[in-house]
Image (cartoon, rainbow, N blue to C red; front, side, top):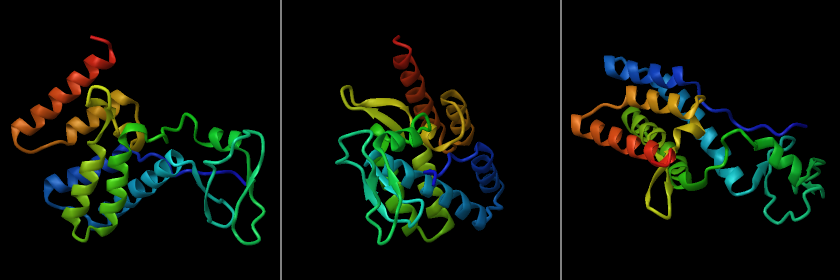
Length: 192
């Protein structure tokens, strides 16, 4: 049985919800669908970041944190479950899939706590907006290092930032401050 992780969200889905909001015709079902897709993606990121796995056979969540030998199979602790996986297979299942939350984990954790508690469409959209506009923080210099949207949105880094820029609204100073943060982050990433 193959290990599966929840995919990144197509940018068109996000863009459509924001366009509907801007027109004043927000579809609660579309917001719920988007929020659930992001929630499942965040849960996948959190599982990988904590070296956990949801068994593809029985659904039991278990840890691989104590697995020392990359070739030694670890069995699912679920009752009567026969699923086994090596650490090497586990790592291959998420490698190069933008599932390592790294320094954006607090944003993914907060969304995973806040979104299920949100009751109104506005609260849900605010939680969505907060997580997709979050950053990975460089702990040494206490500045944003890269957009967390890369982990969530099916796009390369620059495409994700373009999408976020097109979605952001509010007072001119807020958007300008966000653009300045992104510009400074890009300069640091290029070594300028």
